Image (tube, rainbow, N blue to C red):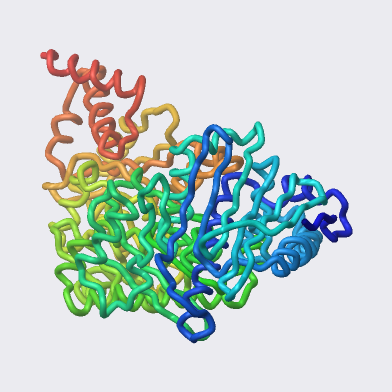
Length: 606
């Protein structure tokens, strides 16, 4: 038997390991199973090149719990170790590596240490009061050895009996870690970290992993059903995805994976952090913000790359050249796929637009390179259900929707139901109104006005129909100047929380008697401010600016001007103003109650 002290400069390194090496203690399962996979893969390689003799046998990894002994054992049938190798890897290399690692990365939120100097093995001491390693090398005539350490720098190493090649790591759990004697606890961790490891893993006599997940195969080997089944494996409760992109790159970086476009119909369904990052099939994290472009965080699926540094701070990740290349590659692949679908099956693309639109618009807002490609397949749907690319919309509205500055005016609605009266007026004039009613469209409109040349967005209810395209002022009304002045005076009622401007114009006799509009620029400013805190909240609380355009050509006003009963006349005018404000959603609380009561009075008036 050999006894000795682990040769490290830091006498008391175990508390440091426990404190700094990992933020979550359950990670020990991932690290030890990953080591077992590595030893098994090495065994396969040595056998294939003739350096290991004899039968490989069944290559698998087993995890067992012994509740009486309070142990968790992880066993493999990999290459194993000789006594000399145990001394080298467990007593020397790993600990010198541990010191170096801790010195370099302490305090940088490092919790992923796959393959670092064999450090993963020492994660076992985070949950154990004693660790035993029983191992036998694949080498001919190798003697099995047993290594034991109780978490101090002292260890024992002795010959022992072991029938099969490979390594057993036996962890005698400490008091704080008894939870890992519960099968469900182990099962949960295995499902999270080990479900796609490339060697069969057994727990409770059941295989818990899929060693050959879809992303490890060539696209030519997979059917549509294979891709959909793998999606179900990842997200068992989701609807089938719209489509997917299979990534398979080996130069200038290694990257494999499958990214799925999920169905997103309601803004409240949007969930980020659904992409899982793996390194050689070992789960690392589902926080992939630096690796995947921000606008594609709504995608789902798997990325696997050994070229992404796992143990460094996020600021370093952002500057890493491989990460930047991977980010750009993913953006290009997504754009190419969307363009391909748009060109080959536009009908299917339009049917999926309700979900796809969020990705495309978000991408155009946040990624200038994506804009160039997306201009070809961004589509806008008008209120009659027809889809247009930007170029198609420009051609369709060339003659009617250019303003006095030569800009193409895109008329849009954010709420086709509430803004129906305005839409009808615009469509009657030959205008095409597109629907922009999602959670991100307010920001999209502002961004695209800056990124697209000679384009202006105007909401359909931001002015009277005659003025929407900024070509002419409204026509002359049939009223005399005195009657116009009288109407302005009657409509000049004070409305709480609104800054109201009144104008009299000669609109079509079919147009409403009064139209309430909110200036495009000020409404947008308030909408943006309402989504921000601080000064934004201050601007959002400022009174709304509203223009009441009185249609002097509407026959109703002849009767109102002829009304001799002043109280009734004022109520009629007030009601017309309120009806117009109602169309803008600006009649609330006490003003809405007063409108209802006043309407009842007028209906009973003689």
